[in-house]
Length: 285
Length: 316
Image (tube, rainbow over all chains, first blue to last red; front, top):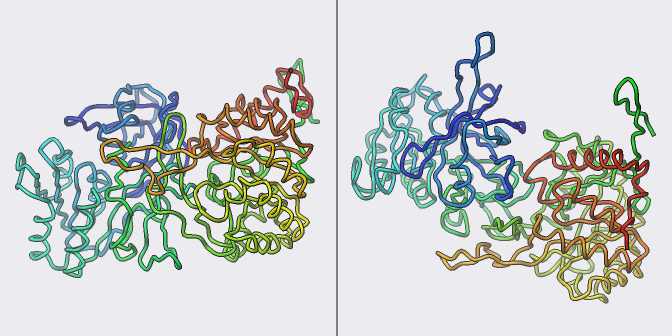
């Protein structure tokens, strides 16, 4: 965990309204685990006042600018422009100064090697699944089910396929892949691969549906949650979700930033996980 | 005073930033605002806790408190609304799990606390009274986000005096009382609390606010209203600290929207003896270090040898 004062290496629109930002982050790859996140800040700008949480898409190296220098280590985030913060971010260019706090939170547990792995990503929710897939393909067969409203919401499919991941696409309007919810695809896959382990990230209604399906089939599930958060380090208590067994007398609030963002499904109280539907920070920031 | 070597030719006297608040010795006047710094431990990876004046812990109650439903936070222009609802681990777990870490840090620990009832305020104060790790108490009578245990005591001078007297009778620890700005005249409460035995005041807590999502037509906080903090409230806080400093003799800690050293200096100049940094900790976990360094640099540039020369130096 560290606060990097660093620069943007590139910032490109990859699909309508979706961006990929590459940030210089020396040493980051060694410490970051699949499923962790960063708190991002545009260094010279107020507003936005608060940092924004973003899942780490991947880390990697670029060749050095000049012979004799070490290769440049970077991290990548993907984001959808939805509000003030992400609009400002979309205008950043190479060399702009930013701050990255991270890597933060608990990532995914890799599960049992050899078991089939099914990843379910809804829209921008597929971000934390890439580094997970990188690890899982080493010892398991990995399938990625991607859902979105329309074809513009389906991103990074080729990147996953290059890892050797089998991909299945579903869009609500049928403009790409199968028409309908991605959870319909999951339902079929669970029938076919009853020993699978499932990893999911996306909007809350999707996660709830995934949880119901996995619980019914007794399939282990890990979910990565998104939440509004101010600090990212467990101090503000703004990002809590209700844990299993929560009640007013016996509060079991869990910090998404510190105890998550990845939770085993059974740790959460699915009947009243959040008080509002959809806390996806990607949708509000 | 230590000599700070600038280069071979000149040396600059390093200014003394130490202040004393009600018997608590602070190596510098910068500390976190309660609720923005957890129990200290959360921020240890990002800043040296021994370089700040004090650690002020998250509001503590007799029993663990669940807090409010989510969403609990919302960003607004130059500020944020929160309605966390004083979620905390309760005094037993605080002593068992949080205090041992703080014991090892060579920085005074000020424990912010509250009660659901008058009796609970007294009981928490009594439990904290015997703990050698606790340098001082910060009595919270100003949380805007819970029905009991906060603002009901802080908006009425009689109720405020009553809770302060009770706590005073249960603990010899230095007692700081944190005031709410959500009153007609903060100086009335400040004086009542001073007379009841407070050793110092801290102002201001957050200002009640509200924001609405125009698409869903719902309040952006589940609690509907929340406390506004951040740079947006700073001028109000500076004004109120100025008023309170004029009205009482006990030291005042200024808090509200401090992000940079220059912001902290405004509070010191109007007479705050120390400052608290809140929302800025969320933005930059090392914000307080930058503020301490900035204050020191300002003193050097202005030829100020002791921070005391600056405190209350407002030109009228």
